Length: 92
Image (cartoon, rainbow, N blue to C red):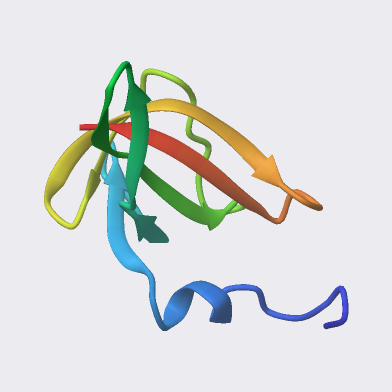
């Protein structure tokens, strides 16, 4: 890819509608199960995150966003690789 390519195509096909305070944007929503060892047994935990174009919105810890109609609180957000995309870890 060249530096001038339209990065929105990465989000367009699989992105879900998200919003923060009336601002809408598309993001890739992930909710994988995570197996956590806890003493003699394992627990299953779910982690929620969104990956979005950094230029579309600024999310910071404590923000509330709506993803597919469900509210989540941003725990942390960090830019990925060259900063074109940001991933925010969410809490339900």
